[in-house]
Structure formats: structure tokens, C-alpha cells
Length: 342
Image 1 (cartoon, rainbow, N blue to C red):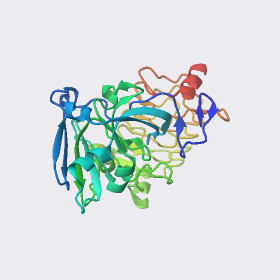
Image 2 (image 1 turned 135 degrees about the vertical axis):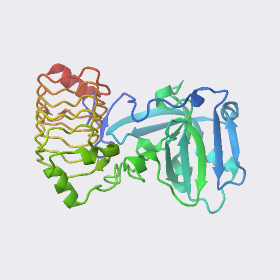
Image 3 (image 1 turned 180 degrees about the vertical axis):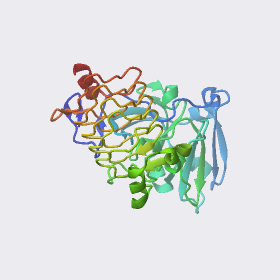
């Protein structure tokens, strides 16, 4: 793993180091988040004194700088990030925590009311509410005006556009944990805690492998997690809109396949044949294409944050002659350099 081709011994397993601060997940909050005159932070649930902060109220609180490494579930990490804000503990001490409280739930100013949760003990120790990054206010896509920061967990636990904090006796799964099977603990160092276990039984995976139509798996964009599809050669080339997250597609023969609007995030496509495949508009964040055949493939308008096309340490790279990347975004340093040079 590299940062401008320097060794990075502090990286969690499977991460790529970057100096960038990529934008992942939702890009825009609701309008209410951006109007500081109307913005509110409500703290409620198992607290003694429920309270709602205005932005002026919040900015009166004593703040400090927190320097932390951050690790995204899509596979990128950034060292020594300088955030400014307030420890969550300060807020919770003000409202008073009831003895039966065990979990903290955070909800966002977003169209889908994104939420996530943490054990109360962890949140008190590790979580801050931050408004600035590198001395400047967070930009809109990174959580302006206020986001959660919990550095010991994958970054989806650091909710953007914070609106509500609720203390609970029983846990409730957050948006990404519920809709995309992201792991509810999300510890980058504890092994594979990016996703929960595979979402299909072995006999269902076999049905998928042998299918001549994939319509049943396209219904409501069903998310398929952690499937073993190594060496797969689909009987139909129409794979549009399939959601194959964190799947093993090593050595799969997907040449000429229609993979438009697919989600292959954090999937392993090392050694796969994607020659002439159409992946326009797909989410390829954290996907690995080492030694893959990408000749004349179409990756236009794809999300490529932390996608891997080459291992800078051994030069093990994909074949990318004729690969189209117009409109794609998120490439990290060493990967972008490799694609420009080939």
C-alpha cells in the first residue's frame, strides 16, 4: 500500500493510503442543513434533559482540534486529518445520560434520513462532533455544517450533516447497515468488518451462476453481498443494475457484458476478463482489477474511489489499452498515474 509510493505501515488490511479526501456516499444534504439560521441539533431519548441546539448555541461550546486517521469502507485511508469540534461527551454530559442507555443513534439532514449507531461506551471515548477540516469549514459534500467523527470505525459510522442524536437501550441498524449490509461494528482492524456475511445460500449462488436471465436479482436493486463467483462465465451478457458488493469475481469471464449501473464496490475482479464490457455509470469504489483484461472496456461516469488497477509495489497491473474513463471520478494518486501512463 502506498502514499506517493512511500510505505504505510499503519494501514488496516485492504486499504490504500491517499492524500485526497474523497467524497463517498451521499453528496448533498437537505436544504435545512445549509441554512445556519434554521439548523438544529436535537438530543433526546434516554437523557435527563432533552435539548435542541441552534448553530449559535453550538458554536459557544468549548472546541478543540482532533488529529486522526480515517479509513473508508471503500478502501481508502488518510493519515493525520485535522478536525475541529467538540467531543460528544461534552454534549451528553450537558443533557445527562440515563442509566439504561446503551447505544447512541445519529441521524442526518438527508433526503433518506441516513442514520448510524454506536455503543455508548465507544462513542463517549472516541466520538467528536466536528465542523472544520484543516482549519476550514467542512464543505457541503463532507458534512457541512456538522458531522460525526469516530476514527476507530470505518467512516460510514462518522455520519455527515448531523441533525439528531438519540440515546437508546436497544440498538437499531443504520441506513447503510440495513440497506447495504455494512457491518454494524465496522472496526477496520478486527478482520473483515466491512460487510455482514453472504446474502445468498450456496444453492442460490448456484442458481445465479446458471441463470439465463438476471431480472429476479434486479428487482428493487437487490444487494448481493459476499458471493463467491470466482471464474464465473454468465450465460447472459445482460448484467445491468446488478448489485454485487464485496463479491469474489476473480478470473470471471465478463467480456462484452452489459454491466451498466452495476454496483461492484469492494469486489475482487483480479484476473477477470472484461474486454469490451460496458460498465458506464457503475459504482466501482474499492473494486480490484489487478491483472484484469480491461481492453476497450467502457468505464465512463463510474465511481472509482479506491479502485485498484495496479499494485505499485510489484507493478501487477491491469491491461487497459482502449479503456474509456471519461466522466469517472475518485481515482487515487498511484492508480491515476498508472492509467495515465498506459
